[in-house]
Length: 330
Image 1 (cartoon, rainbow, N blue to C red):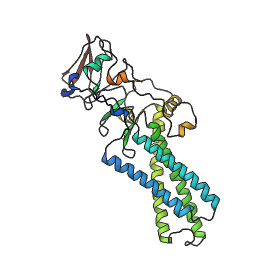
Image 2 (cartoon, helix red, strand yellow):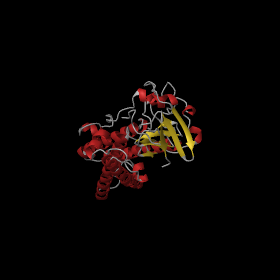
Image 3 (tube, one colour):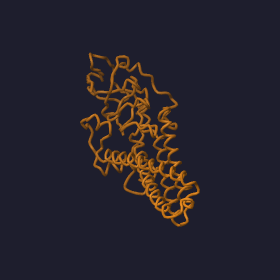
Image 4 (cartoon, rainbow, N blue to C red):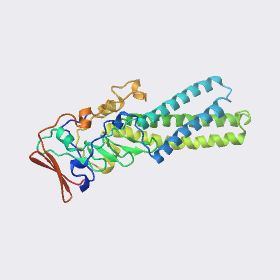
């Protein structure tokens, strides 16, 4: 959780944004308190396609394979397992999509807010010129969300959201449950083909043989494709949590300026405490805490420091009291 002495980092700088007075304070009716939803056409389309593909798999599994089966026990058990995994997958997807991934308050890089941090002379404040926000360490700006996101791993169009510290658990669960239902569907398709080869094709499905084959082949292709994709993403995300290094940090080969947590501590923080069934529930949260209101809005009281900013060449200089801090382009 950020503190007044927390280190801040920056990205691109433009002279227009150097002066804190240029930043407008965030509105009183903070959008972070509402349902988080990114209005991106590509992301919305990808999210709709994701749900459509899950419902298509549901249709084929239930109406092509399970209901026509003569084995009631087989149909009941597999129907319960598949539908339970599909429900958890869609619930995880929804939570990953509408959960604030860890957005930094927009437009809080005002002179009053910087003064309220009560930084010591010589300390440096970093800010993002795109959303005019004070940037905590390990935060990155997302051009789609148009916000700086704490511990941003990447922006995923399939969930129409960034994957950050607050919703990484839900994204991990989404990839895990999709991989599981894909594996389950592929296994059932294999058994159904064997059953149809042994029996009369007209009796193994309520659809005509050509239609049955096409539906099963499409499901097989979908299941194999999504199994590979989500299994890789699941492994990548778990690795990021265990190594305490986001995808962006790994891609940019950033030297860690933070104290890395152990693998177990990272898993506990991301999944909401010690190992329990709640780890696998998309309805329980994480141990990451929301930034307190005084840090968000800068209402923690003004300090005695005078804050000013200017541009010297390619270096942004922000003076805190009598000291000067230099922000280099990195």
